[in-house]
Image (cartoon, rainbow, N blue to C red):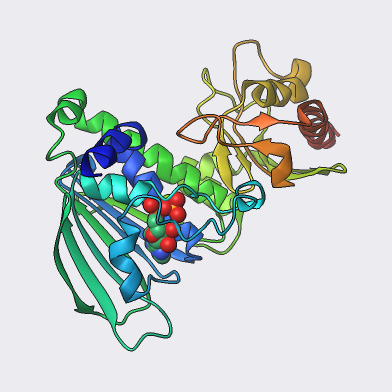
Length: 323
Ligand code: ADP
Ligand code: MG
């Protein structure tokens, strides 16, 4: 079982940024309104994620690091309806199997919280702990027993920027959650959690950029979209500032990217790319999310309709600009 976990971890957690993403998504799934992440040595030495979410019942803590002990699927049918980010019960066991993990957690209705420390497969301690509601997970010495993975990591700086990218996206996807990221004690990202996407864009891309963005909005029978796009004068030579979210999940889809570009029409210089942060709400039945282990690639049953909606929303907003 431990071996299976490690092999599994090889797919789910190939770099520290993957661990950060899974831990923060768990905090989001737990209903947290505040999530603080601290990393040291690009997450290899330490990743700490503190949330004020539901917490985990003391008796369930050891189960949370056992494979497929997810609390998020009650029946197979739930997989279809599911809106939460995690659903396979693989992430926490995978990370635990290749690190030293400390979990401090407390639910609203328990008299005491609990604290568990595990080193790879072994649970070292499981005792009563602090009562502050929510969960703190500390991951230390990631990949300590998988030297091949460690060797694969070439540059700490590249890992840090990958973690920052992931945190930026999570913050953009959830303006209603307050995020803090610190790297070696230095603050890299802070959002207010007041639901204002423009403010999150300012926190991520700077005030100068946030002044040159416009709100877009649209709806058809199956989708509702809202977000911000940059004015045609504010463009970049790459797509890095295009973020699409479906039901709160970051996704990558070239066709939807094209729809954004098409929305600008001739206003956009060839080879230039705008900033676009677009949240899409739709019936989960219309999205196939399990096509890739990182859960980023999706299959859309009404892709053409959605492309039209995006194109049209951008066109309308930019047309207003010209007047
Ligand atoms: P899942 O696919 O369910 O997200 P994980 O391996 O990521 O599986 O987590 C295992 C279980 O541990 C979750 O289903 C959840 O019950 C619990 N859990 C993990 N992190 C948290 C957290 N920050 N707050 C509350 N519960 C958590
Ligand atoms: Mg999860």
